[in-house]
Length: 149
Image 1: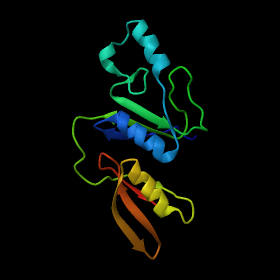
Image 2: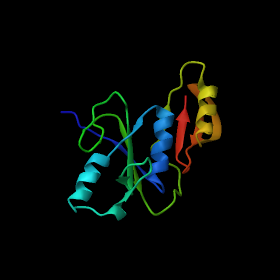
Image 3: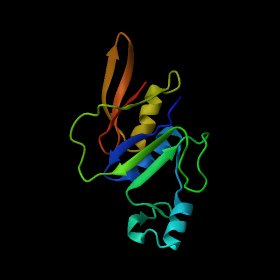
Image 4: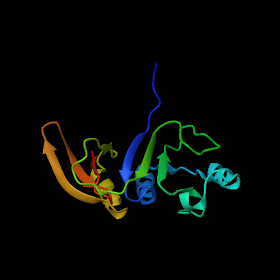
């Protein structure tokens, strides 16, 4: 038996994190508005649980991105494949991540990819050169480490 999974990342601003990672990875920001609109119309949820970051309702405290080729639930907008979910937490990041993403650039394109990601709001932390390979450690806008190989 295989398990379905998603990577959940704590964030101060889940929507800006989702926007960054969607652009960084070529993913899509999930559109949960059909389900949210249905729940609002039925009085099950209230407007204070939502925001409108892209001109339609989204959950205030959650935002996700999904791979554009993977299946998704049309009613909820939730991805059913490769997916990152950002959840709002009140505290800022204080220690090094115990888990991080590695982004694999095309051969010979690591520098260009790093520049593109800096343009999206990431910052370069350091270059690592070891016998097993070379990569760049970067930080997203909330200070989460990730590597570009």
